Picture 1 (cartoon, rainbow, N blue to C red):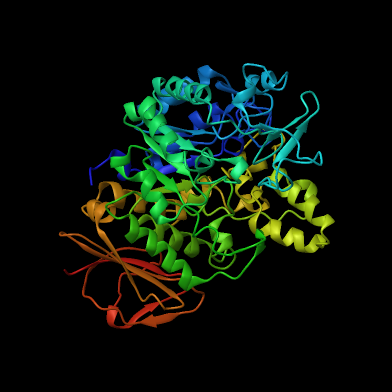
Picture 2 (cartoon, rainbow, N blue to C red; picture 1 turned 135 degrees about the horizontal axis):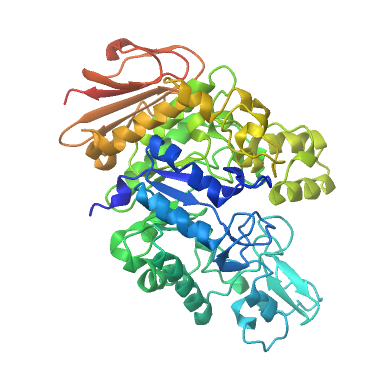
Length: 545
């Protein structure tokens, strides 16, 4: 495999609304990110994935774009954006822009024009259909945010298609003018010196609504190859696609370098392992540890040499991993370090979501009024009509609601966690007085410094190539408490062993230890023949080859 700079990189996702507010309006901004660049440099990351900061009415917190080449006033100005790119690059940090091209806002000038008449030049920028014979929706395709994916437009007597909110009409990618507009806009940002794009729900752009195909449509890959050819393929940048429906075989189509599409994709097979097959995340099921190890390992071995993995636990749409599958009460620090170690020793590019590096947890707001997320509120309204109880729905929100990831970044123990001097757009998690960056930086045994060691191990140590390109082998696949795997190349053989439970365990593992590289407990005395591990204890060994 040809070596790329992003194979060795570690990405940090910033959700700007919740990162750092410098204006006092309660919303994070670009100047707040500039202010914290030295903190990110200290952590060791070299790429920022920036969630959308484009002009937007914020119906879906910026994932509804009304102008791709302007900045939302609450985040700052284009001059702030230019300064952020420059200041990040000066610290060796590249900025990856989050880009939403499956849909726009209903306030985008293209859509405002498209609505005017059936013969408007912009009409075919979106997907319109006549009503069914009974006057109803054209077909039974549903919106991800519940309800039908069609919205009736009184002015022209047709329905437009929206896979998300009715205020997020889908673009018609079969129209070459749409594709040309998108390519030109991407080149606008690339010329500014950004480090690439994270492509939101990119697997939906090949949809064929009349055949009820939404994900992985037949034109998806030709569209991406054209996009590569006419925009980012001409720059040395990182591109990652959000692809909820990807299998390893599909992922290879995107990330095989010979196909000239994307650098890598986000797949969500592991992230949806405890979701109900029909009801999804709103009806959480039991976490299957054996299946989890199988999924993680399948992606490691399947893409080896033929594609590239994105490694992540958290993002702006997912609950905090330390609360979801760990123990955020008695063993929060140990759990957070365990998850970090398991992920960062795998092959792929690791992604850290803001606050993950200090072990931020899910939030447990008592009142629905304290939640902001459009998806969460729509779920509550819809399921109230279906007979769900308030208690059932709040339990689902506490476990899997998107606002778990969106509470403001906890910088210190002052009011509103040092995030803002005003009233935050979303309430801060009440545990901020103990869980915050200031405390983490003052404690050399904190989660932050564990992440820093892992990043340094991947990027700057003698084991770097083994971690980045070495073979992966799962050990003890049927063990219900231990996650253990080998990473090996011609130079080194590394072993990771994690006790994924609250009990002390003892196991015998083959091999002879050269040295302990990193542990999340303060010990270096381990015997593989009778390896004793405390709750969530995780150790990385160098073995004799």
